[in-house]
Image (cartoon, rainbow, N blue to C red):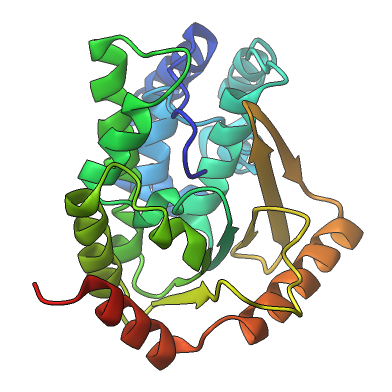
Length: 275
């Protein structure tokens, strides 16, 4: 979620998206109308039709209610052809869809600044260090995809975003002073949004509950919690309620161990120094 590559489009996802779009247009619904009737956002439906998101399971049921049983069977057949490789890209697409519709999103990072908080120079610095290296076209696609995801923070003002970030990530000064100062300015700016809370975990914290590594949690519109973890091109989507409950407990504890809002702002301003 922080330093990994955004998944590239797969042929099977693009095919599914094209089928959905054709069936929607045959039924004479605009994207906005279809999104409203199926209770998803227009942006989410658009990305499914573009092949940029895995369709959620509920989409088949909701589409049957809107399009009828015949088109729903066609859509279901298209869904069964989707390539679901057990790797980062497939899990990430599913998580990205959950992320876009979430009413609450929590993130703890100890390896890299969370993707939703990365300014473009920091993003470029990360992908520039990616191994194996990316082609120039892949590089620009990755940067564009990540910056596009960041619109969630402003496009979903009623969703709450909470981030706990290790101070060591700021101390590291990845890519040098200029990029780090841009990062600090960006964190201070994003932290002013009413729906965003950023907390720094201090370097020294003897009672630290984040030793099991980075974690992401999202609360869905029906108040279910879904977790996501990734490392070294491997990722897991966590839907088991017992597992997500444990993740919520750990995250809640870390929020109490990290610096509060005002202390975090003061630290960021101190680290930034004179503009």
